[in-house]
Amino acid sequence: MDQKFVKRRQRGLAVLVASLILLIGAVIYIGVQISGGGETVADRDYQGSGNGVHQLVEIPEGSSVSQLGPELEERGIVKTDSAFQTAAANNPDAGSIQPGFYRLQGEMSAAAAVQALIDPANRVELLDIHGGSTLLDVNVVGGNSRPGIYSQISRVTCTEGSENCIAAEDLQNVGATADLATLGVPEWARDAVAARGEDPKRLEGLIVPGQYVVNPEMDAQEILTDLLTRSAQQFNDTGIVDRARALDLTPYELLTAASLVEREAPAGDFDKVARVILNRLEEPMRLEFDSTVN
Image (cartoon, rainbow, N blue to C red; front, side):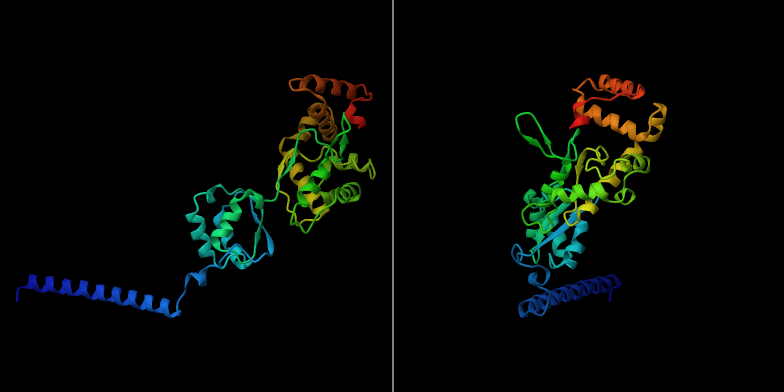
């Protein structure tokens, strides 16, 4: 028999055998699925939007939603990480999910879990501290009150469904009495802050304005420690010690001056108000700003 014909016949037989193996495998798979002996959709995923038991989950800054899958599986929020990854990949809005804390439920379908992370209503509110904010509430013209930082933290932790509502009074007490090193107050500010005793305003100016993700499961001291530690790092990153030395001030005096400028100066007049403050400190004389009284 011609050698070329033999080789052609062998290749054809190999293709036929491979096709039969694939066909048999498909038949077996379908049969197993029908008989309930293999992994079904129900084996990989819960059904519905959850069991009503709320759980708090965090997407840390710098991480992606896909990294959350293993934790969700371990905590019983979704049934399998693979189902969650598939649901995230199939949802075009999954890429818009932001870092923060979210309230989910146990035993959610993977698609429902992804959708809950997209819904801003399930995200724990950010703590938004504006420039010039004070620790305590301030009464303003007209009889209105401007919430202080402690009241803002309380509002963020006391949202609907929260099991750890922290009162502003608890934060004020911690701020006035807790050990300064434990709270994360920078070393260059501790002596000046300690000299104020248990003044409820003694931490004034030590929390940098900005938006913060607050873990609503923390207690009052843990929240303040987190905010003060992060703020201290930001202050140190600006070179505040060297900048203060160049002005013949302590870092705490420079911080106080900067805080007063932020509260007192209209836009565009920061340099003028700063010069007034520095001149009065150099005299020395009382600053006599409204914010130093209120």
